[in-house]
Image (cartoon, rainbow, N blue to C red):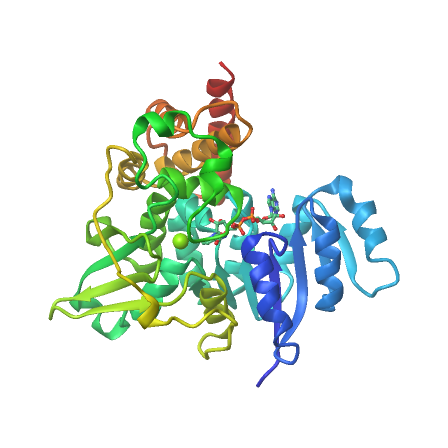
Length: 384
Ligand code: NAD
Ligand code: MG
């Protein structure tokens, strides 16, 4: 087994912790270069010690003294601030897991894409707000891009590149989230606690709320279009509450290649860490005799308008998708802070999208400026 250097951006989050869990099982395979986190510096310090990381970075400048103190007496270098996170992403590592949440992960992920090594991408917002630019950089720099999102890992594993012309559809599965069977009257009053209680997956707060509105699936349609160079019309979303089939690719001869497994992010993470090899994950094995049934249905876009909104944004262009993503991040934050109701999230996103339209974005600078402007407008709208 050859030794690889690895960095984990967002190591203290849900994906980050699962990544660290796998890395700790392979001390001879991975040499950890950088770990980055935000406010949870005690966990960051603990991870850096356990993995003998070279560098630990907190995105919060004010927490530098705390992180420095927690790592006193070790050889771990300590840095702080948003720029230091980007600098950590620029440091040479054979493989980098990008698991920061939201558009805050864009610049670090771009820095990795520009290095031309391997980018294991969990941060879907990066592709939603700047997919065209990121994918262009990936192609130019010959960066190996491996999706971590479970559905996209499933598609990556079942999409036969040599039969690309014979693909007739991509089946993107969705659990349907905690409100799959709830009506609008229930959702109007739904609390953050109810929204983050996902039936199958244990995830960060933002993506949990996105799963409840089904914006997560909307973001994933856009993510899939960029990753696999397929038109949105070829993507069929299927609500599959058991989360056993993680997605599938259908071919013109009628074959459907599906990826299955227990719902545990350590499986797609292990795939992204090992690729092109497979490495072990402690994920519970799938027991077919214990599955009482696998069900599939089309989503209800009336109760879950986020799916339609995301498709419209993607069709309108990169700027519209960036606006949608930024407005959604602000609205989800406001919902989590109990400033707006659950159904107000997508309402706010639509209002902001109407106002902004589809501005042209050509560079990462354009995307960042539009992202910031949208956030300000969304905050103002919500404060009213
Ligand atoms: P999380 O909230 O649990 O963790 C986010 C990480 O980003 C943390 O390490 C946090 O410290 C860091 N972070 C937050 N704000 C930051 C900032 N401004 N600057 C730098 N770092 C910051 O989120 P998560 O659930 O692990 O999700 C991470 C990404 O992976 C998201 O884009 C999400 O959509 C995607 N994803 C997650 C899952 C899952 O199961 N959790 C599945 C598929 C995709
Ligand atoms: Mg997913």
